[in-house]
Image (cartoon, rainbow, N blue to C red; front, side, top):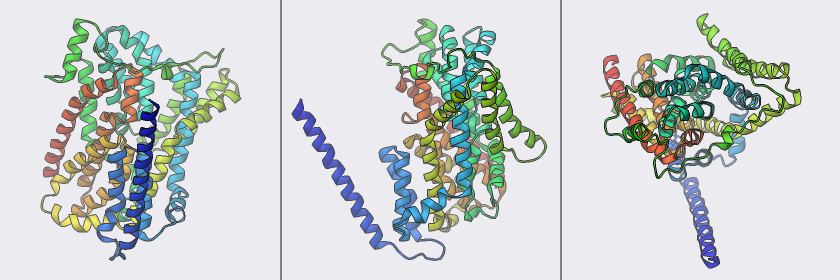
Length: 508
């Protein structure tokens, strides 16, 4: 046994040495062969950082590593070996990243930490469940409603919706695969349709780049473009609508694996397949409420009301939503509500710090994503893609939205991250779309296709955090969840692709 372990360790060390050696060799080749810029770009070399990023994502499924190596490759191509001074410091010190960091890391993390400590979100859902859920169908509809209500997307929606709905869903005979599908399909897809969250802010930071400066000059206009693209996010619409039909038992399942799940639960009442290995959800269901503190619906409704108020009221008045102010005031409202209801100030601040720690990795991804977008801009990646593709697509521009949908589906499924996909695709695809057909509706079609395609991959990939957490929170076997959800999501994606093609033909 010891010899076998030593042999494996030696093999891993050799593989590591070979990988490092190949990386150094490739770096030397890039450095030696790098060209001088031709006009506004470096020719084919302008694509190298994006290609490296996508390739590493496919090989390792590690978004952080892929983004970092993409930035380093950009430094080699441009002759900037000091990528910290050339790219990281300017990007991480920019106003747009400061805004993203403020909302995502501090405000959102602090809010989640407070909800975990005061139990407000979970108490709210459980209170509603006791009054509204009376049957298997109403339990599924309740799960769908909670996914829509917790519209922050990703891990937030899956954890809050899954852990609060699971007890009542189990009671009324909802299979764990069914529940995981509903929770997962109402996480990221809903977050791109109900934009009162950090998604518009993140995407806005990726598209305020030079090739689009004439139509996207600043963050405010970029967020407005996100909002305008919502009606063109066809995949998210089909995914959420199909999930609702599934909840009310009106979705044709044909011969999909989910059909067998429904038949099993109706015949035997078994919540899991006989050979399933359900994921435990103890880490997510364990209460962190301090002794003596009684959770209330106010702990949830007050901060969420403040957040929605700052986002919705300006839109009603014809102005842009106050996303940054809304998140900041929501955290303050959550903290103040908890303290006024008996929680100590120290406990409240500890809760916020704990929540901030929990989203630190996300903040790192955001920083490198913004940096990669700046690298692509400095190399003229978008300009080069436009030069080589505009002529080809000018003859059949109507296929571009469907093609972008497919590309984002593949990339996001491979890396398990919609935001990582956005970082690679948005800075290139939008300038290309505008060059092919400088028409706003066409641009919004391409925008919506990117949003939806990346969400598909994030929702369905077995290496995605939302997929894993959906199975975990709902007590489902991970691969059972993937295998039952994927065919239904592919149907939604196919319908979306056809819709993009038809609408593009009508617009152009």
